[in-house]
Length: 56
Image 1 (cartoon, one colour):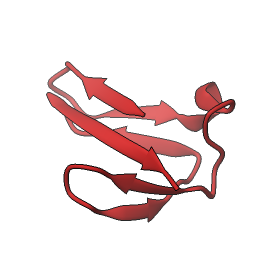
Image 2 (spheres, one colour; image 1 turned 90 degrees about the vertical axis):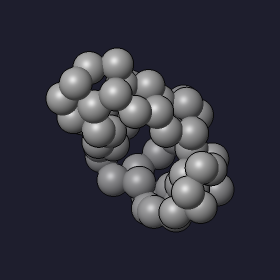
Image 3 (tube, rainbow, N blue to C red; image 1 turned 90 degrees about the horizontal axis):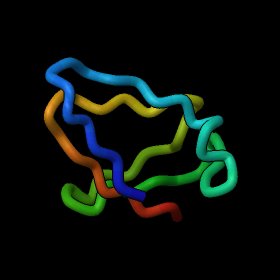
Image 4 (cartoon, rainbow, N blue to C red; image 1 turned 45 degrees about the horizontal axis):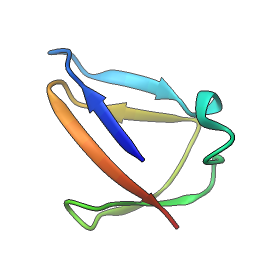
């Protein structure tokens, strides 16, 4: 899953919009940094950044 934020401010995405792909509680891995986290109900992304996530 790729998330892009072209805005200068941080944005919060509601995971419910992506329910067919991912569910809250799934383990996610940021491919670029190898950070792993458990998905909650929202994903926040800093301004002017991209995230590449692998669903485990």
